[in-house]
Structures are given as structure tokens and as C-alpha cells.
Length: 235
Image (cartoon, rainbow, N blue to C red; front, side, top):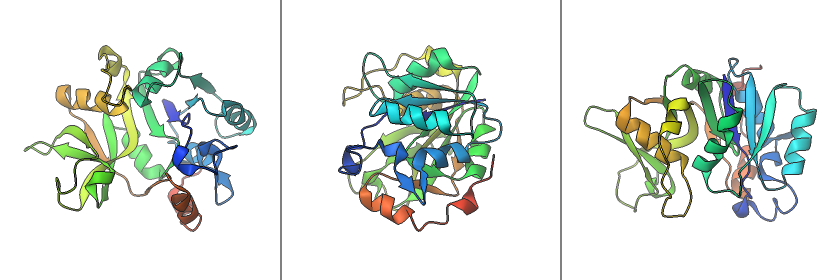
């Protein structure tokens, strides 16, 4: 099975740490975030696409020297980065399997949850959080099926806690039948792929046992003391 790791962002909120280092290569407990991503991938993943842009040469050097995944491709968003959905679309020519995982390259995940996600026909990783306005909230229908993702809703829209999008997905090539619209941000969003699938098929929602997004220097500092290794199954 293929996996796509979204690792091309500039990491603006991480400045000045990302002034000379791409965010996926920032260290957590002595390992780049990207390394933790590779370590957490399920055993059935045998080919990885890493989407690169900012300081891509450093990511290329890292992938060349790592020994966890021998089969990989570096994918650039052409003609320029146009969002997470566009990143997945750019990976289409490099896909070797009909089914594939997609995960954020600046989040920490646990291996068991990603393995469970990989077994679903179509799925998304979710997690319980407070403060709904910070997240993409998973909205369910009356029969408890995923209906859409509500991005950063106004405060008070949902009572705490909410179940939110953890940024890991199980897709198949069916998504490419859908022509993504431009979002209000002027980008093509991966969440629009998921909303399309939710309207046309049943999407499994897998609860992540461990999920730690790293968006700020404070998040990075807090991650240094997490017990990450207990959540990683060696490949």
C-alpha cells in the first residue's frame, strides 16, 4: 500500500525555528518529525510519497539517508503549492496502489491507529478535543455517519468535547473522480475530498489513541517530554 506524507509547508508559525530548517525535520526527542511519521506507518505500506516544497533539498537529503522506507518518491506541487488537496492530486501519477494513506507530515501518530485506519475501505482519523473553533470538527448525521468536516466553527457552535479531524486519511483512487473546487482561501482542500466521499459512501471514523499536532514552538517543546516510543510499532 502507498502512503502520502504532506511535508511541503513553510511552517510560518514555527518561525524562527523554520528559518533554515523545514518543519518536518525539526527534532522531537532527537529524531526529525518526518522520521516519527515514517516509523508510525503500518507494515502494509511499502511505498511512500513525500510532498515537498520549502527547503526541499534538505528533505531529499534526509530521505536518501534514511533506511526505513526503501521505495519512495519526492513530489513537488506544480506549478506551485495550492493546498493539501492539490498535494494529493500531484501524487496521483506516482501511486502504485488503488488504496493509500495520507497524513500530515508535522503531526505525531501512533502505529496501532494508523494500522486500523489502513484496513478501512475509506476512513479518517479522529480525536476528542476541546475548543472546537481551533479544529476541523467531524459532523455526524442522525444515524451517526460522517456527513462533513466543519473547519474552525465559530465559538459556541458545538459543546465541548468535540471529535475533530486528526489529519490522517484512508482513500482510494475514487477520489480523483471528483473535481475539487477552490476553497474560500483560494486553495484545494483535502477535507473537500473527504466531504465528497462522506456524501457518496460510508466513511469509517477511527479514533486515534495518540495524536499530537505540532504547530507552534510551544507544541514542539511539549513534544520533547511525551512518551512517544510506547505508541510506535517498529517496522
